[in-house]
Length: 524
Image 1 (cartoon, rainbow, N blue to C red):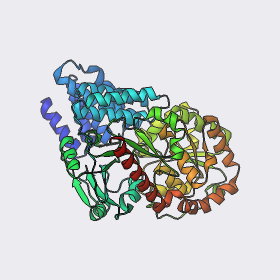
Image 2: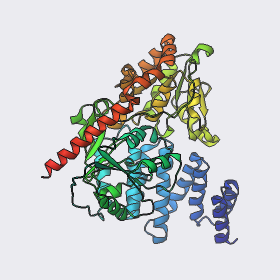
Image 3: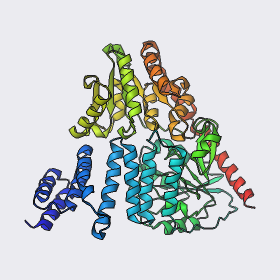
Image 4: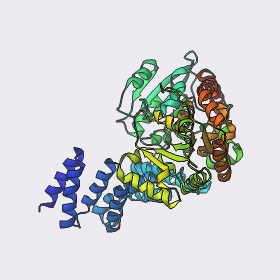
């Protein structure tokens, strides 16, 4: 057997998305030449692309012990494998393992962009860990800074423009879930006083992209520019306030912001916690998410902008009608969670198990892309069974484009913790489904509290696991409230600060003026 030729055949089949045929060849290679380690890595990629995360996990566990990072030809292979292993652990909800895998990958990459990408992955994953402290996050932020030692930031410079120039930095200036929260800010700044510039690090384009291009005072495509070159473009535009919308999410350009090309730099909206970058001056928050601002600052390197009501504005794309709560026709309550399954911790599974025990005949409906395959469904079913959840009371639905329509089959939504729902929570409420959420002392744990407080349902946001269980159970005893909420929640949402784009944008504009003035004064 010509191993290289067969491997290249498998690679072509993988790229053509002929996953079954690719796997057949890879298994032949692994039998005939178990030393050919690239075949195991490609096998993991095949499972990732086909959504079979549990099988991907197994493939990587076969590969990683065979790799020697001291061999130059295997070091890069191991970094790639560890990055994949971090991603699959995050998908499966094994967060500490995900964080450690990403950190190991970063060390093997040796610094610069690739290492920073892996640390961003680690930081993002850490938001789902219920045991991570401010000290743990600080260590990750230090990792990012150390791997960014190649960056020399610009000296700060302030301008006297007639209109404040606000630049938005993102890879998501097309229809994306984050657009549901950022749309108002991107499109409704008062052009008499603000000029808007968009720095797009994506090559994708749709009607959303085109609209933003049309209203922009400046549009810059930076997808193919290095971080230094992109920063130079921003610097040349003399931006007063650069707003990073990505944080540590996928395809972020935080290293552009690390060059400090703008006078003042802000992050938020697209990411729920601190960036950990000294070059980011402020983080956009609100009175609910900031909580005790003094204790919250332990988790932040930025100064916190605290808006009086909400720090995001929900722009709802849903055109679906609200239906009656299903308990009225089925005779039992259905709980639901449409959050990413990687957010589902053992602590939350314990709570869900107790809730189902305390509410006889109730059901649990889960919906996410992990349920697109039998592999994923079996993994989740096994995990839930270990927590005492009877598979007969569980329904797993695959992701669909019109996923919000499935709220017609949910009476009460159960939020995740510590990485709570954001847009997912707004969608549930807009469909008339109350959400029970738990909050903690980290910013990203308090989105449910902020959303529910702004819509007038602060009693559904609680500060302990015991109260989370009790609140969910108590709701099932008041079917009339479920009926009333089903009828009224959409109107409550529309009348709330969450969907008052004018008031929201005016509040952000006021904050922009204050921080720009304060930073000018502080630097003389």
